[in-house]
Structure formats: structure tokens, C-alpha cells
Amino acid sequence: MASSLSSSLLLPIGSASTKSLGANRQGVCCAKTRCVVPRSSNLEQITKGPNNSDFMKRRDVMGLGFVASTLFVDSYGAKGAGLPPEEKPRLCDATCEKELENVPMVTTESGLQYKDIVVGSGPSPPVGFQVAANYVAMVPSGQIFDSSLEKGLPYLFRVGSGQVIKGLDEGILSMKVGGKRRLYIPGPLAFPKGLTSAPGRPRVAPSAPVVFDVRLEYIPGLETDEE
Image 1 (cartoon, rainbow, N blue to C red):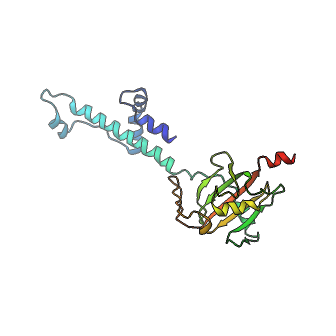
Image 2: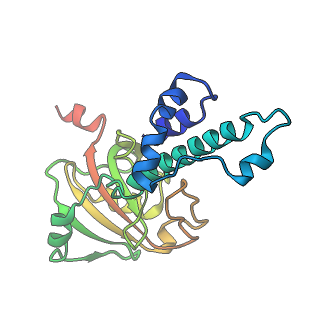
């Protein structure tokens, strides 16, 4: 919506879009602000040309058109500003969050903590095997800085091979296919150098704790061998 609006406002004066916009300028202006149609005034007499031309009248009409256009844009922008923020897809919704409060926390020797949202029924991945997992990465406040759900594809990597951060490696190794888990990853197991995120996303400071919701989708090759 925003892109179509901005592109229409950038069209050159005299184009079809600007003509249709100008066709109802007077109605928009009068309905919103009770505009008064400009009449002859002292200012008009002063600004008339040497031949008593209608130079000022034409200028006034152009001015009214500009005011009407501004009102149109402002009202359009106000509607956009009133829209609720777009909901990002998550692996754990509001109901899941409530249930998670009663799930016991597991703490490993490395300091990694996790809660199993769903315990899978498939195999666990051996070290070095490729896995397909969906994830939602958050800062401790719950703001998302990265997500495979928004990309529409699970993330493929070799688990236990250092291709991802240590906390994610360790957390997935003990999961089973079909399982869903929340990982509370301490700073030393997260991003030692920090992470610069996309515009509008929270930045991850160096060695700051992060939270990952992870779902282990499948293990390519392993499931085929078992079949």
C-alpha cells in the first residue's frame, strides 16, 4: 500500500493519476477544512501583471490544489499509522508461552539451559550429520532478530561441526526429530563478536545471551537409511 501511494505521488504533473487526484480537490478541501474559495483581494491587486491579468487567480487555484493534496496524503498516512504492528511467525504462541512456565528447566554443564516444548519421537542427530531445523532467534526481551520461518525454508547445517553458534549446536544434538525446544543460550555460547541485524531488528551485543526456539524437522540421509 505504501509503495503504491508513494509511486503515485511521484508521477509528473499532468499525468493521468494526478489529474484524477485533482478532479476532487475542492470537495476534499471543503469537506475537511471548510476552505474559502479565494476572491479578489488587495494582495491579488498588487500581484496582478501590468495588463491586469489573472496571474494571481491561477496561483490561488494551484495553492488550493496543493493543500488538498496534502490533506489527502496526511489522511492516508494516518490510517497507515493506526495499523497494528505486523505479527511475526513464531514457534511458540501465547498458549505455548503459558504452558512453558510449568515446564522444568534443564541446565547442562556448559551453562546452556533449555525447556522442551514438544519431545520428538524420531531419532537424534549424530555429530556431523546434516539436519533441517526451523528456528526463531530472539534477544531476552522476546524481540526477534532472525527467523527461518520468515524465509519459508528450514535451515540446513551439519550439527556439531561448528557451523552454527555453540549453544545451538549443543541444544539440537540432544533433540529428536519432531521435537520443539526453547534454548536459553548464555553469552559464551552465543555470538562472541555480536551480530548486526537487519533494519528494524534488535542488535545482538558481543557475548550477550540469546533465546532460540527450535524445531528439528528431519535428518537428511539418516531417515532414508532407516527406511
